[in-house]
Amino acid sequence: MKFVFIGDIEFGRSNKKHCNFQLPNTIIQQLNAGDALFFNLETVLLPSSFDRKNNSLPNKDIHIYSDNEDGIKYLKQNIKCPIFVSIINNHTFDFGLNGYDETVKLLDKNNYKFTVKKSYYIDDKIIYLNATDHWTIIEKNNKKNPQNSNLWDKNCLLINNESQEEYTYKLLTYLNSIKNNRILIFSIHWGKNFQNNERESTYLSQTYELFFKKICDLGTDIVFGHGAHHINDKYYEIYNKKLIIYGLGDFYGDFVYKSEYHTDKSIILNYDTKTQVTEQILLSGKYSQYTDNHKISCKKPYILDYLNKEKNPAEGGNRFAHEIEMKELMPILKKYNIQINKIKKEIIYKNKTISYKDYFNNPNNKLTHYCSDKNLSKLIYEKYNIPYPKYVDIVDIQNHINSFKFPIILKPKSNGGGNGMIEDIENIDELNKNMNILDNNNYIVQEQKKGSTYRILVFNNNIIYIKRSKPPFVVGNNKDTVEALIDNLNIKLKRKNKGAYVKRISDTYIKNQGYTRKSILPYGQKLYITNVINFWNGAHDYEFINIDDVHPMNIELFLKINKAFKLNMSGIDFITNSLSKPYYLSDGNVLEVNWKPSFRPAIDFFPEPFILSLINNN
Ligand SMILES: [Zn+2]
Image (cartoon, rainbow, N blue to C red):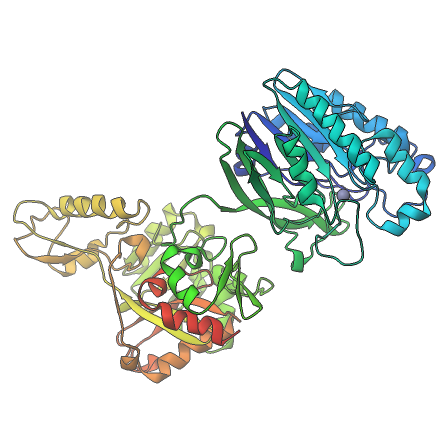
């Protein structure tokens, strides 16, 4: 069978603090990938009519509940396989036995699978058992309020002393004897909140590994552990063909964000019981507001990384800097004694950690947003005197048209990469014609600059490389039309990267070279076909520029741009007639600043300078 395990869920923690539970489709798909889904529910479920005041458990500091069914209904509607929920944990009896009964009723009504009190679940394929080693994690609470321990002890499998441990072994020995072909799953909410904290301990917090292995030896096929509120350092292992999950973090809900524990992250773990093959998907979380807008605290997951999949780092713009995980980089990381943590997305060098999640940029840097929004990047360009080709929203062009120099180019505000661009507009008539057919809200008008386009990779105030994109061209064979030659070229380009081919063909540019799309191109004749020169418009080839050949004023400008946006890493797209002359004498202009640039060429050609920029700065 194939099982899917995820981290803890809270749908909120009170009637005011409620999360609007919704998952992205990519995650729903993953949760539907197995024959059953498993998670731990960290809250009590109560109807709004429930008398919370009189049922709230005394001598317990935190009581959490969800006051409606929206979350469990949503999950059930979207997940087609059986859902096994663990409800034995430190919050099970926050609202006494009455609160527990309500939880069970609501789960039953919505067709969830779970255990009741000390019993186990059994069908013809699965035996499922729930336990915990604490009702709350602080030992002194345990001693001061034994009545709470008793409540847990009486009403669920609480493993908090030797005799309970012995009892568990006996129970599992018995379940193993009736198991036959079933899979025996032991779900346990164990240990401390935050694995390495010093102020708490629980019965199993020192001996859990031994305990989990022992119960596997007694017939348990899967130990599903949870409780730490973050991905455990070792979060799973295969032991004697059994799966032990130590902790996958918090999947969804009202959980605090602690950066040192990376609590934004959690794991979806797929497990094939026949082959013991696992697959891990790393999630991160966006923290958003409660349904009543009170406070920002609901963590909603999104997929950060398919940990078992090969990366294609050619493109940039990924959720994290994929390139750093490429196997080609491993020898040099080893040479400098740099470790890499693919779960935390950090590199560790001399006991320091450096996050590569946001391409080495500060996750709190608001200016990254300015890079992607053309109207905002303009504000930075103006403030720091950075040259850029003049542009305005297309709807504002009538007020500015006299100050614009033709030719001009029309660019969509979003959707980069040469999609939807219209260039070589020579006069007002042509502009008006295009304005009649385009979505005017989504376009800017920009002065069109001539020259070569360069990508400059800046990292920690160093220029790692400057590369010039070679414009795509076709070569005549005395037989095919220009159009047919372009089609052939695009077939080849799409084979390398299906989204990066010549989409914008510049008819004016072709005309200036003496041809049209219908011309038969003479043998050996080279014809450039576009003046939108970037990777996504088919400019796959590039050459590196010797940095000594670049005028120091230009270098200074590139570093200034990187600083103006407060970036550690940036990919600057720049157009100029000559890099060896200062930008103000060569019509040099910034086209775009990318804060998540692909830096694959750095790994392939300049790994040493790249790594030195990384570690010398940190
Ligand atoms: Zn807990």
